[in-house]
Length: 331
Image (cartoon, rainbow, N blue to C red):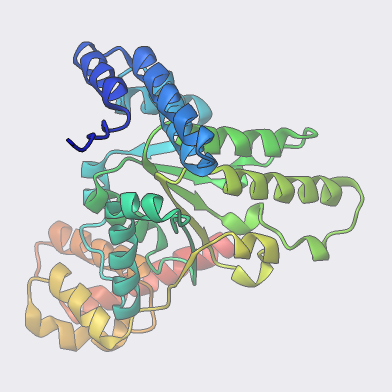
């Protein structure tokens, strides 16, 4: 007696999905995916059904313009958007610490193996909190990762989302997450402490009561974030972040001032005269890469204008100018 061969599941739905893919009929594709989702649901596999519906809804809502559509929506909201080529340019001098290099490799692997996470029904660790002094490479790290993953990067400065109107800040925050959830991307939230304030330090009246609602809204948006969005939140004040917000982040990256080895590597990339590196290393140690870049650019400008070669005195002059500018800003 011949053994009955069990027909593969979803065969006809897959045929129709492929047919519709040829014509670009995203609405029909979404309808077929919904049919498959219902079959998963009947088997009690609600999480997988939800995943299918989420992807189908995103596909149906997109017009096919891709990056152009994302660019239009972010410009309207006042957010910065970078394509992978622009991120490559931003990260051209990026030098990660040995610890962060490992973490970045892990984050990239997460994206490349996300189907394995889906199959195992394990939440994808796509949220990373970055903390450390200004200018130590938090934003540049996000650009570096976005370029490797070939994803657009949305940069949102959270202090600009704060509104004096009731519910305005929470509404602006929701718009930022809605924009990111439209397609796979990197979402970078700068000045994160501006809205992730520890609620235990807030009283229950006026503006502080409103800030509590903002933190609650932030938690809801973090929970609803699509797992094809890589989220990075940067702060210089990690001690002021609400504990519940801390717990929403799977990964943490600590950024510190460059050590001697890292500074030498950075100078090697930015100074043509290798002998000059040892001569100026003592002047630049203890500074961030951001400050060092500013100082070197000032020095290079002076050399061009004076038609001279780079030297220790020019760099020292640029350091003093940089210091004076910082003092003017403070006053």
